[in-house]
Image (cartoon, rainbow, N blue to C red; front, side, top):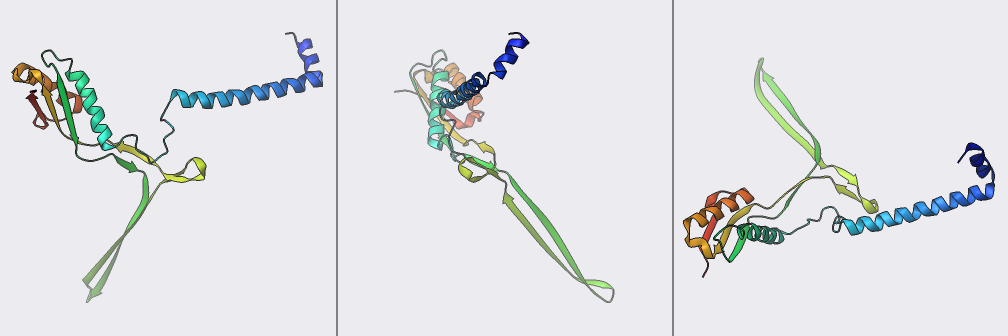
Length: 188
């Protein structure tokens, strides 16, 4: 489009007003679509802050399913079942700010210190951030996963020492636990 045609288009107030209205409506439609598509593409991402995505039992069950898929691929394992036990639930660590002070008071008698009195005080508060809906929430720094207590693998090939060792190696590597927390036994 040459500059003279652009100038005449802008000078025509009705066309310019129509263009602004159309562009504004198109912008609103795009905003609504992006919000809708964002919800479809990332389900569960809108969970309110402070809620944990999984319970400890759900975490253990998910670990069991992943281990069954991996261990089931090991040669000689056969049919299997996996049980994972956890020690605790998820732990959330929040940002905190604070200050501490130590005061010391010394009493003297005859030029010598006779009594020393110390007092210590501290103030700590969670760092709050603005959240949706005008609420204020504590700032989450990290979330610590539950600690795994132990794993039991019941499989058909457990009577073979090579299979047993491969299963123990796979489980300890996958979960980052020691081998004394893993039991591999023969399936009936």
